[in-house]
Image 1 (cartoon, rainbow, N blue to C red):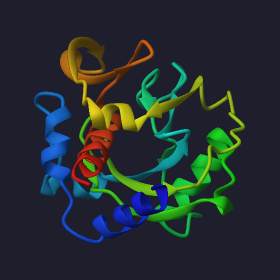
Image 2: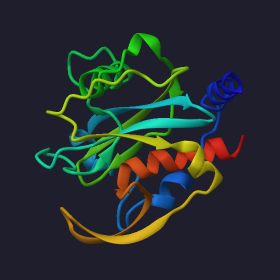
Image 3: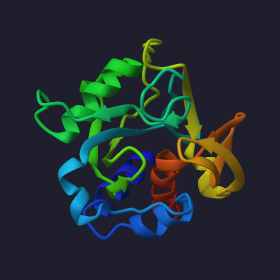
Image 4: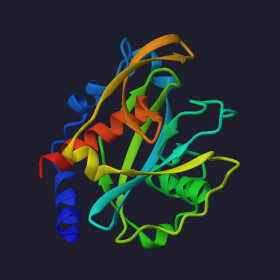
Length: 207
C-alpha cells in the first residue's frame, strides 16, 4: 500500500501540480503568490522539508511550532526548514540540513521524491521551495528546543478523508487578518504551512 503511494507521489511530482489552486484556497486576503519585478532582487530563498511517513494505517507529516522569539513568523506552525545559506549546495540540501538541525532527523534514511510548487511569501519576502520526502517508518526525532517549541505529527490521512478548513481572525505583523486554517490539537495551521498542506492533501485526494 505505502510503496504504491510513494510511487504515485514520485510520478505526480514530475507533472503538472495543483499548486496555484491549492495555495489560493488558504492564501490570506491581500497576499500574492508571485513577486513583482521590482521585488525580485530582494527575494530570499527558503526551503522546507515535507516528510511523509506511515504510522499504523495512516500517513503523517512532521510539523514544528516556532518559538515566539523567532524573527520571522514567531509562534507559528511550520515545516522544518529555513533560509538557503551560501554553504548549502542546493535548496534541497538546505531543507535536509534544517531538518537535521531542528528535529534531529537522520536524513540518510529518507528519500526525497521531488518538489512541490514554490510560491512567494510577501510578508517576509521569501520564495518558499517545499521538498517532499518519504521514509518507511516514523523517524527517531531529536528536537532542538532552541529552534523548536513543539514537534507536531500531523495526520495527513485524516485531512485527505475530511479536509476540514476553518476561518478565524489573527493578530499579525500587518494587523488583524481573517485567515483560513487547518485545525489540529488546538493549533491554528495557517499561512505558508497551510498552503503547502493544501497542495499535498489535494495530490493525495486525487489518487
